[in-house]
Amino acid sequence: MNLQNNLLAKSLPIVAQALGNKLGVNVIIGKTSGACTDHKNIYLPALPLDDAKAAVLANGYIDHEAAHIRFTQQGYKDNCENEFAMGLANLFEDIRIEKAMCNLYPGCKVNLANLVRVLVEDGDFSPASDNDHPATVLSGYLLYRLRADVLNQIALMDVADRATRVFKSVFPAGIVTRVTALMYKVENITSSIEAYDLSNELMAILKDESEKEKENQKQDQQSSNDAAANSDSQSADDSDDASDQANDSTGSTAKADDSSDDASDSNSQAGSMAADSSNDDDSTQSVDSQQSQADAKKTAAIDKTLDAATSDMPDDISTILERGLGNSSSETSVPITVGSADRHKTLTSNGNDLLQEARLKTSGLQTRLRGLVQSTQKKRIRLQPTGQQIATNQLHRIATMDTDIFLGKKNKKTVNTAVQILLDCSGSMGNDIHTAKVSALATAYALDMLQGVSVGAAAFPGYGKNDVNIMSLLGETVTSNTNAFDVSVHGLTPMGEAMWWAATQLAACNEPRRIMLVVTDGDPDRGTEDSIEELINLCSHSGIECIGLGIGSLVIADKFPIWRTINNIEELTNAMFEIFKQQLVIKAA
Image (cartoon, rainbow, N blue to C red):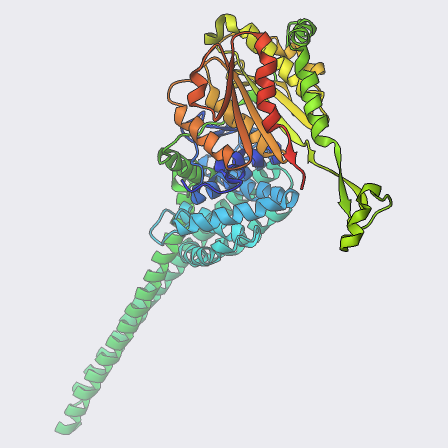
């Protein structure tokens, strides 16, 4: 893979997590085979690192579902009369909540516009044809027209125009006029219940127009029947008149032979007129019949729509995205799962005892780290051409026209570092867990005492369905969370999931130096090795150092670019000092 600076911050799992945090929703990645939501959390499948299309789908899905979590009232569709009415309510609600979300977070408008563009390009958003189910035609018209006009998703303009033409050809003019007038009310609704009410209004319009069309057709049919009867009567009268005229002409004995020819011509002309009249009536009846059939077809379209099911409507945006993200997941070569995290309520009160033990057995760690930081922050003397204090022992420089005789001071190095500690408390830790948790607490405490260092700590696995148990968040004081470090062994070793979670925390930090320290006894869960290797590569190219501290194990040497091992807590001071004397400070700009 082509790795670039800060690629970690741009990688899809990190972006998805950051977007969820910004919108105030919990995004869980890799725990499901497809995308879904439980109206509290948003679940995404394992995501590729740098797939542009998957990024658009994921960002759009998060924005859309976050809008539902934030704005949609559960159960608002429960009283809908059928599936089609439920689909209409959901369609109006989608428009409402996306509009509200874009007003609250302008960045969502960009994400959703990009999403719609991709869906149009892939054919997921396309207009119905005259031969499709009428419910598909109507709901497609609503969906595309409202997204184009209300949400200003311009990629849909052409699709919306074509959907409009099809809608007008399938439904009666009364439906077109009233539905179009009604649907733009969605711009002003402010609740899910109002979306439900809007769907009820539309259903009422369909029913009302269906009755009107049937009554009109009944009247047209009666008028047609009356006209046909009148036409038949008139034709019979014309035929009788023509016959009488012919008889009178041929029955006259007073006329000459040429008069007989005139009578014959008159008889023929009368018959022709009667025939022409009959043909005109037939043509009119044919046109009327075709119009009646067209009207009946449009009326039938209304009735079919009223009885439609959800399957007769276009897929909503959530369904499309769930399918698309599932396909993206299946194409991912290295499955990336970002651990889910929670803060477990601590039931023990042994934190102070652990801290006392940590301070006693690693007393030199805090002192040596503080001395390291102070030595790097000492101001050194330098000569400069201007200033307020002359270096009297440098006055000889003037003879050579060197004016650098004034004393100046500058900071050599600075400390501005974020450290995220991960403690392995899986079942394999066994008796080593005490050494591990005291080491984690001692390191966190020593670093937290240093000015310019922010420390966070978490353990894996977490509790329940969570991969990570947060012990202390970045920016919190370690001494206020010491009880959380008194963890016990349990479960498997979701090291990869925990490290990806830690990476999301560090990627959001502003500190120029960021460090991930993993305290563990060995291997992660089988099948996650590639994910860990991928993450460490990304971190190294994004300014995050990944460090392994092995507890009685050398296995970490094959996994971490920087590592140390200890067998007991007394060895921690030297191990940590050797690591942090290289990693903790950076040269000042």
